[in-house]
Image (cartoon, rainbow, N blue to C red; front, top):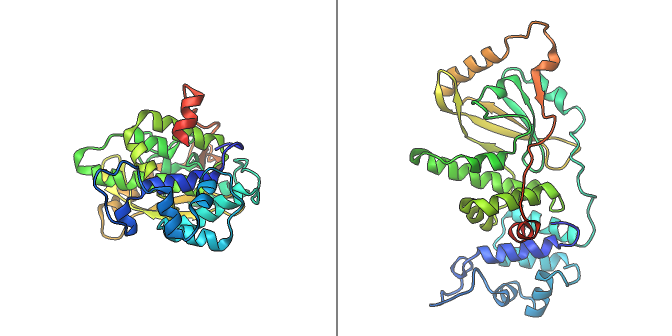
Length: 305
C-alpha cells in the first residue's frame, strides 16, 4: 500500500471478493467460478455503469462523488465503520488526506498510563504494536504483554486449544478488523505485517480476506494470571487525542467473577515499589518494535494487496 497503489481500488476489490451472491440478495449459480461478486454485479447493485466501476477498481477513475460512495457502500453491504473506511480510502486515493503518520507517541500518553496503577494497561499504535505497558500489564501472562510486540502477529503465533478455539477466533477477527480500520494504508509496517502473515498462515488469509473493518473499543479476553490460571477480564480501549489510531487499553474484572481476586493479586504484586521508588519504572516503553521479515518483496506485495 505504498504511493504507487490506490487504497480505494484495493478496498473495493477486497470487499467485492469477500461477498457471496446470496449475501447481497442475488440468486446462486450452479458451477459459478468467480470468487465473490462479479464487477458487473457490484455496478448493477450500486446503479453505476460497469465501465465506471471497473475504472474505480483499477485505480483509473476520477474521485467518486459522495452519492456514488454511498451507493457503493450499500452495494457492498458495509456497516458504519466500513462506510467510514471506504470514504477514508477515497480521500487517500484522491490525495485529500493528511500525510502518513509518523508513529510518534501522543504527547502526555505515558503520563496518563502512569496514573493507572490499579489496573493493567497498555498503549498501542495504529498497526497494533504495543508501545508501552504499565507494571500490572507486564504480569498478565508470561510474555503476554511486552513492549515492542505486535498484537496481530502474537495472536496468530498461538494455536488455541479446542476448548478456546471460538474465543481465539473472535479475538483474531477483532484484531484484524482493527488493524485494517486504524492503520494508514501507506504504512510500510502494515504491509509487512499483512505480507508476513499472509505467506505463512491460512487462518490469517481467511480472516483478512473476509474484509472486516472496525475499531475494537471493548473485549473480554482470557488472560493468564499466576496462581489463578486463565480468567476472563473486560478490556476497554480509549482513543488518544493527537495521533490517529493510537489507543490506551485498560483491563477490568467484572463484579463477582474469578477475575476480581486474580486482578487484585496481580496489582498487589505489580505495585511492590522498586527499592529507589522511581515512578518512571511504573511504565515499560519499547526501545524498538519487533522486526517483521518478508523474504521476497514481489511475493509480499502480491500477498499484502
